[in-house]
Amino acid sequence: MNRIENAFKNKPIFMPYFPLGYPDLDTSIDVIEALANSGADLIEVGLSFSDPLADGPVIQHATQIALEQGITVKKSLEAVKELRKRGVDIPLILMGYYNPMLAYGLEKFVRDAEEAGADGFIIPDLPMEESDEFVGATHASPLQLPLIQMLAPTTPPDRMEMIARNAKGFIYLVSVTGVTGERKSISEGLGELISRVREHTSVPVCVGFGIGTPEQARQVGKLADGVIVGSACVKTIGGSEKPIETAKQFAAEFRGALQ
Image (cartoon, rainbow, N blue to C red; front, side):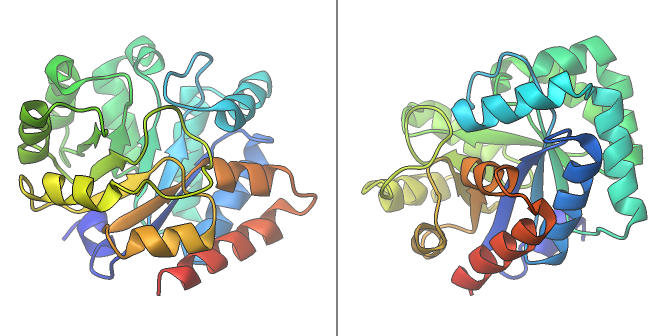
């Protein structure tokens, strides 16, 4: 059983997102370690990118600062390795955009990510129809780490079925149309959307985008196998004078809401 499968033994899981390099590299490593030790079941580790498509203003601001601090793909992979050295043993999924991975070299990126201790990839701007080269690179590496597929309310039914049937690891289900960021309420159609996805797959379905409070996480956790929290996590921790302590409290509150 790999780390992802092991994480889903106790559902629903809590999956925060935090970008490496924000507000600086050392602090981001400490924050991710604190999240892991305080209730996160799986962490979406951000690889910063200057022109994201799916991310709203909070994450864009954070990743811009990370880039100004000098974060690179190479430094991010070294940070993942450092987290493993510190004993972080939950799944770490690398979330980033395709261009930096292409520039790094796909096979080298996948191999180095695997050696660093990553467990999979989320690439919002890489549709399944264009992912053969990247998936081929993952198949060429010993662990064959999964490329996590994303679905949205706007995904046509036939395409949803195709993506869900071929999904590995888990499905990242976007709960709302638009970019990342907190919303006042959970989409009324979320339960029906999750049910439609489950008709075509046996892998866990995790919901992200728009979840900003423990109460919202609790509501989504009744429907889905996992809850992904990005902007609220970055905003709360990044705006704190004591980010490590805030990260611990943030993870504990969301984990508690999902019990």
